[in-house]
Amino acid sequence: MAKTNASPAQNTVANNDVKTDLGITFKNVKTQSVNIGGTDFYYRKLGDNNAGVPVIFLNHLGATMDNCDPRIMDGIASAHQIICFDNRGVGATKGKTPKTIAEMAKDARAFIHALGYEKVDLVGFSMGGFISQEILLQEPQLVRKAVITGTGPAGGEGIKNVTKITYTDILRGLFSFKDAKTYLFFNRNENGKKSAKEFLAHAWALQTPQDLSVIKQPVLVANGDNDRMVQSSNTHELSKRIPNSELIIYKDAGHGGMYQYHEAFVKSALAFLAK
Image: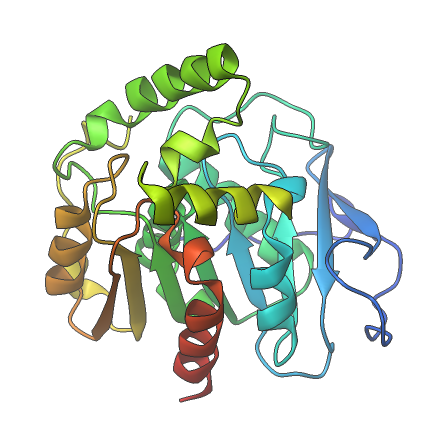
């Protein structure tokens, strides 16, 4: 497969890379941009430039950099450089949003190459997990390890309903004057409500199943045990289909299990990436 290359004429990075200073967190780190084929992709980078393989964080449906949980970002940045960007047509990045996960993966690969990286680790949440799988299939040599959470394989059980559930819960949020994530990411019991409150304070579905057995990289797969957006059974299936995978299921948790158990997730992710 042809590799996405970035020519100097097409891709320019705004702002020089600098080592993160003490006191800089994901909440206050500067936003930078890189031009890819005429479109400025906006991103934030946190952590030591010399901390080895960088970590690319791939976000959920419709999410911007501002939707990242700083507890996750700061935690991973304690040992790695972590980078998150706004997808094309989302947040600060202009342009038309791609219609397929495969196209989003191509954008992500172009972004990674534009920053000059030849090898990265991936952390993908929800739709970001779909994109992570596509990157692993499109350009496996680009990825050292991947952590994917709240996600499932192409064509997985109930994934075709993700958009419907998303918009239904957005409406529920509007009518109840609550952020939709309180319904989408967490169980509606006392434990889930508490976790949601803490978190908020701070065409894939119809695709033919892919052969994930070709993925040879170590992959950490995680989810809550009651994910109503991407049914938790998909997470189990995903782990079975990726040969070199590890599985973590968080009890009494929904789609946002990694946020609900953010301390445990960060600890597990760091240990996995350090192996």
